[in-house]
Image (cartoon, rainbow, N blue to C red; front, side):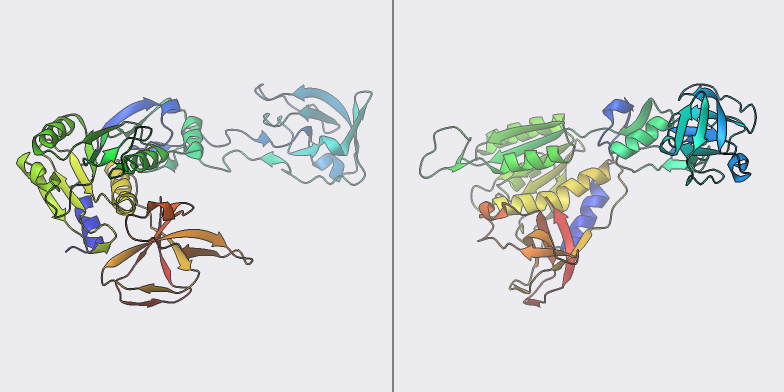
Length: 399
């Protein structure tokens, strides 16, 4: 069997890169940038007033002048005024251009105004460039603001807007099909017999995908019948970029997925990984170019494989720059019984010193999805058997 690292590498080598599209900036939240964005002009593009108050020449109060004639009002968005003399000041609003001839702003709380004159408070200190956001102090025209491969969240979208980008080139959102297999599955809300179980895995997969920003997601349920499965998979392979299946990939008589995929011409890249839970994981590429992730049907296995392999692979296919896994220490020692790599569900907590810890929340087997409630993700632990001590640091993968 492949190791976890080998499986991850093979997925990265075979998952096709998604195409590029140009979208209006307002539609790009969560998308992966596929072009560099450069600074349109110096930021700020002028000496910007950083506080409501009086703009003046700082040499005047340093020379003993504490009462100044209020010459005019400089509002944000208006062309800059010019200071008439050192004996004058100009009232300014936050965000306005600093008037020519001024090099400082005194906060309005430190000024009293009467009869057209501004009196500086006795304790008001005035230094050159105080409360002024200097031109070009954030970034210079032509400097790189955002690199291709960046996922666009609120700050990045605002940065792109500041660079004048009405549209940006981003990765095309993949069309995903989530498919469950099994005769025993019954939809929530439908009558369920004692020998049946609820169709829950798909809802967990859909929630995870949409929670990570994937919107083009369809779902389907197929019974354990070879011809029906073949027909439905053929349709989804023709109409979607990625298939995510749950169930039907182990070694039982009704685990039909690997055989049916082979009959459809899909190229198996690997089947089975040295991990617990999730050993029967299957990955391959269809003749259409669609990627196929066939996840084990036990619910813990499904969600672990989705978070560990599928979601990172989707972002990689969209061109996102890979991020190093988050790492965290075990709150208490933990016994690893298996010789396979293992995934341990955890919740996180912060102690009195501000240190983050992972608290083990082991399940009662890979079917015990109820134990995942309240967990934030899982640790990837090395093969055992052995005992990992308190403080052992491992990668954390969040749901």
